[in-house]
Length: 476
Image 1 (cartoon, rainbow, N blue to C red):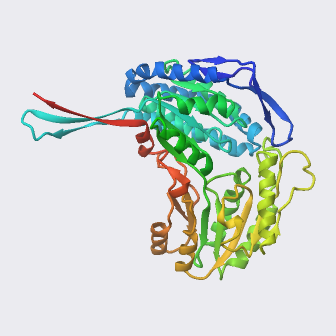
Image 2 (cartoon, helix red, strand yellow; image 1 turned 60 degrees about the horizontal axis):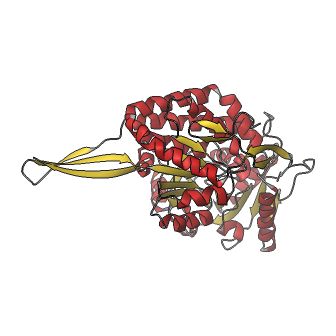
Image 3 (cartoon, one colour; image 1 turned 45 degrees about the vertical axis):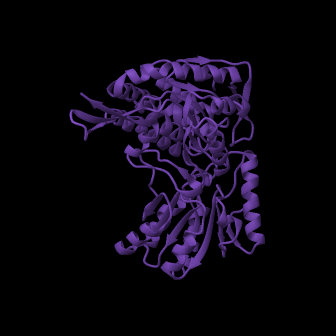
């Protein structure tokens, strides 16, 4: 599965003696062995990136734009291969994998054009014969760390803007899903970027993360991961004063107001909640449903959840695949058990499905009579769990929705434009969807506030974290 790839260092594939066993979440059995980097491999990747920095910068924005478009062309050509790799490693349905790869392609298209728009400006000087020149330059070598749940979209959100800005990258993807990043790097290999512009290392924390964070040449770190890992990374980055941006956990509220279009809300909420088996940081976790709609919403939500077909994501008629690992399934089981013990009512799912004895499957789960103090409501459950509670007034629900340390995404359904704008303004979140869950697009900023992270990926804002601003005062 990985035999044509390996680590990617200084423009070529590197094989290693050490290997990491990648487990199929569908079968629970080994899928393949991926090469594992040593500390010296990581050092070689850092050396290659540092050497590439002046060459990548010298290409100019238009040269980098052309290279990123060529990479996107190759990614489109290999879309079927990439989607198959995503589903094999994550278990998610093949249609979801295909859409993810297309989102990744779109990142490279968008930032190819942003590379042409790295503008400076001229400011009049108070000194006779002088002027201020403000320019923007690549921040330097970038280290990128990505999670397993979106193994194509997450690397693309970091690679594309960094390369557009002129920053070489050392990427360390999750050990659970290394193959998708390998396919992406093979596409970038054909783009015409200088050797060393992109480097891929897969391996243990000691052999990858530790030397990367200790290297003074790494000037920026970008992470998609848990809040706990983000907190540690901020501490580690402080030693060498690295710039950091990170998209961390979520605990998104979904508000169904009494004037909501109930059928539209259900049509969108059910597939969104159970996409990727609920392992999505922006998925709604906390369902607040108005008293007048609660019972109807729950009944229809449960009926639709029961229609979802579980199985191997490579089968085209499967609607939900497995959780990523046995550990993740155990954690989800514990969350459900804790909620039931605390008084929640389990109305759907909550167990391993009959007939799927292999792999890490878990049924679409619905809990009602949930209180705000239950763990399932207070923490990100990162699984196929819809935790539903009631509310009676707008003021009440907004206060409860904001009672979280997380602030990545939030959603509401209403027919009132005035209420929509009030709600969007009141919710403490980096992103808000009103009558929609579609937040991720290459042309708009993606990211959160508070414990959900800092910085933005996507949009014209996404390239800013990879650029330093320089001021020159020139007087003649």
